[in-house]
Length: 255
Ligand SMILES: NC(=O)c1ccc[n+]([C@@H]2O[C@H](COP(=O)([O-])OP(=O)(O)OC[C@H]3O[C@@H](n4cnc5c(N)ncnc54)[C@H](OP(=O)(O)O)[C@@H]3O)[C@@H](O)[C@H]2O)c1
Picture (cartoon, rainbow, N blue to C red):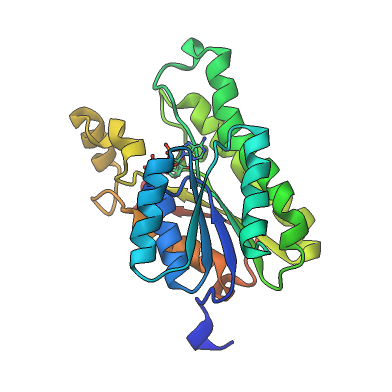
């Protein structure tokens, strides 16, 4: 192994869903800095343009495609646009997710379940399928699914979200097993509480914040870059013998 290029993504093409901000944006930044051509994605075109402009301003090769990955047609458009722009796909990061309500499990309506399953589960599944013909042509392809520690130990009030993230771990293992034949590696990351807009309901509530801190060996919330660093490991040669694995990055919360 060449230690100088262990974490390099030179000449790779990566798609990162939900990357106009938060963890996805940080992953896009790290991948671009490692030499990849990166496709950013989110629903809001204005936010996406800002994210792309920020990374281009740092000299990186990035593009933004605004698509709602909860819709089948939009997923196809995202993959088609990527291939049209860069001619190939080596890395897919299934990062975008929703957690629309905080409520006891018996209060969820089926419409909410549909929304959560469409974005958190059907999208990673179909995007992986759509990328398959391209990933199998790559010499070093990888899929990274962003799950959650809620998949391992669910929190009250986040029931359906936790169910979707647990299924994403199962999906990671299923794809890793079947696509090992094609040398496509598939791994999952389970972040703990990372200080983004997504988790604001947790860290901005004094009582919940206190409860989290009591169970947090490292005694602080995580930041986006700590997840991006793990994603870079899983996308690069550094993890070439790792597939079907589930990594927590949670300050020890799930111990
Ligand atoms: N933050 C945490 O504490 C934490 C903990 C465990 C797991 N995670 C997981 O980490 C991932 C990223 O979370 P985050 O905290 O970085 O969230 P975030 O800061 O809220 O960012 C979410 C990103 O996803 C995009 N997005 C949302 N729905 C989308 C859709 N249907 N189609 C395309 N893009 C969409 C958003 O942009 P638009 O709104 O413009 O679409 C935004 O760019 C998620 O999978 C989440 O479950 C986060």
